[in-house]
Length: 189
Image (tube, rainbow, N blue to C red):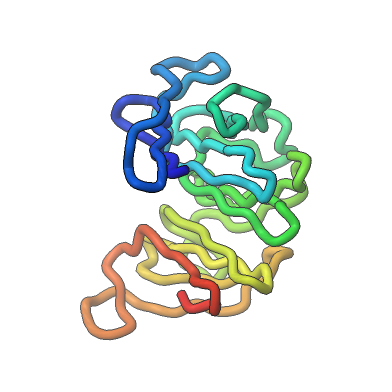
């Protein structure tokens, strides 16, 4: 199935592989199973769906039919609470990585336990201005679209900075506020 975070309608929509509508769930609100600004959806290897909302202080977990199962609450993220989530990704061990609206990368175990965070607002290596997308390669390296700094940054699975590429501009290898990225099966970005 294809799941779409329908931000403007505060819901998730499910389609089959040919684009036929199957099901939708969610309405505007703050209660479990409700959304305000859902902007990211991803699934772990078991098929459970995780939804990040730019206005809610939780990451909600659903089964494949949209039944609310649980949530990761910001108040349980020791030292790295968040006011919203912008992007979600999973590594090969089903650890969850989330970009918070306050420019941090949060890492949770495959059972939702907070493990670590890295980054903060800034222009130095390992810091971000309005990061908007995260992707993970086959070796569990993490790539972040550092939108406000016009670059892509790469980290190891422990959050150690490895490299960055791109600068502001329109020439080859330059970006003007990159907001998305993906990695294919051969680790090409």
